[in-house]
Image 1 (tube, helix red, strand yellow):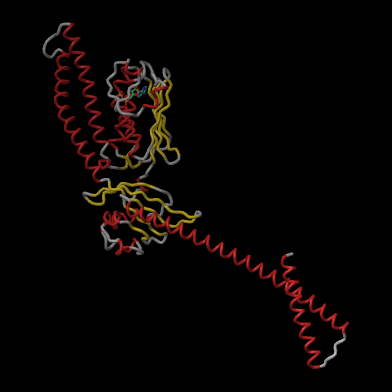
Image 2 (image 1 turned 90 degrees about the vertical axis):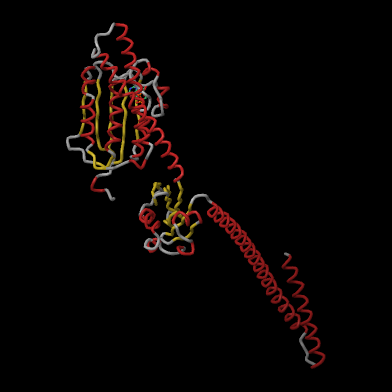
Length: 435
Ligand code: ADP
């Protein structure tokens, strides 16, 4: 409506000018215009001018709206850009001030971002390595050479690995692939220097080992003497004397077990002491059972080993430590099973994992206490009543060892009915192992 009024005003003005011009033409050049014809011409011109002006004004209005929209979009774009810049700067300052080393690799393997901590850990300067392919840098920088194959490995999932880069430099490396809308863009690598923690842990382990070793000698000597006394090697003892010595022997056994478990614990806490070799798990089970043959016979326990017909393949394990796990679980099964009870061991391959189950018909573990299983010094209330030699460290040690093999350990148990302890360890077959 506003446009129509403005257009009408403009049209009337132009027509008035046109009329004035026509009148001038008439008076100056004595041209005689037919009054009716003139009215028609004036009306026609008026309508045409009106229509054009309306159209023109609408176009202008539309253009103004488009321009306003455009300016609005530009403003939004500018503010988004500024926000992005601020966010980018924030991320960059986090990366630079981060106490861990950070490295971002593009999907073509070139270094996109490196912070000063990563420079220190990798023994490089940013200007020497930025925007260069990591593969080409391996030749010039020995530390990059050590971590290179790990960082460039073609895995599209996050993983963490501890690596001894040099004698006094142990690093925990977290590799996280970066995806944008499912498209692989590269990797974010975090280097966490754990050298100090490892040194402290090693010192602690050394301390425990030396104390425990010091205790081990006298305790073993005591054990020997007490057993000789009980055998009557130094003459026959009176009943009361024998009872006291038997009690002493029992207490001494507890101490020997505790010292043995503390020694194993000190060893398992040192992750670098793991030595993986091809291991025949069936063989390990047989040897553990053979070692406990006497106890099985004394308690008249029915024992069964369920295995598949085909020979179980050799897999990469630390034999000594896995032996310790199976021994702990099997000894527990015997210890916590009544006379004439039943123990069954089964070994299967399930989804690429070696799954071992040790089932017994023993005292079981009270449900409310099961969440404490596998923690240091845990002992079930029903187990403490049994007067068996125990330290409460066996399952803790077993869990540590299984987890160091990237496996899992768990238990299903019902008090008074029995327990099943399971171990599942990823099977690294001998032929699939790269050194
Ligand atoms: P220990 O047997 O020397 O006490 P472990 O760490 O091996 O130490 O076991 C911790 C506790 O878990 C035991 O004291 C016992 O209460 C419970 N436990 C372990 N294995 C069994 C089992 N097979 N049956 C019943 N209880 C068990």
